[in-house]
Length: 154
Image (cartoon, rainbow, N blue to C red; front, top):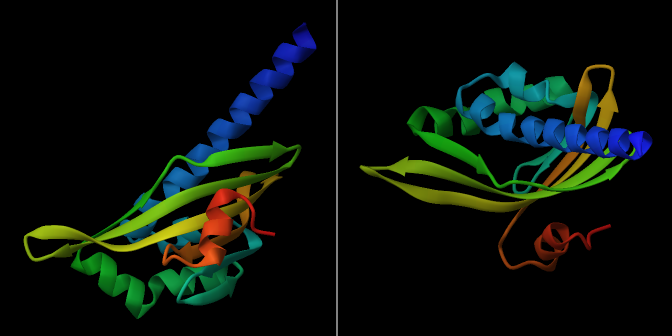
């Protein structure tokens, strides 16, 4: 019984660490901590952003967040909001699926600027859980976005 409890506790701790990792992205990105946001990835991690391209490595991800498009968004007022993820654990690897919505200030109110499906591939490292790859697809009705959020994407 002790081994079963230890296994269950380890899985709960892994799930909580992954939830925390994913939840950190929005506040770091919106607060302008581009290096902090990039540090959520492995050194050679990939961030594939629907409509913006694919970026490999922390330096490239940081440069994306330091770029004019992202900086203009956050300086105008923005909030990157991520849903609680659906997590599948597999030893030192995990997959998570979540939604993300970027809100931006529009006059005296806020509007949804982009809504996306996200697939997170995560790995346990000596630093803890890190993002190996995040694929972000705009929820534009495409089969790719629906497959990604449903868990049917390859």
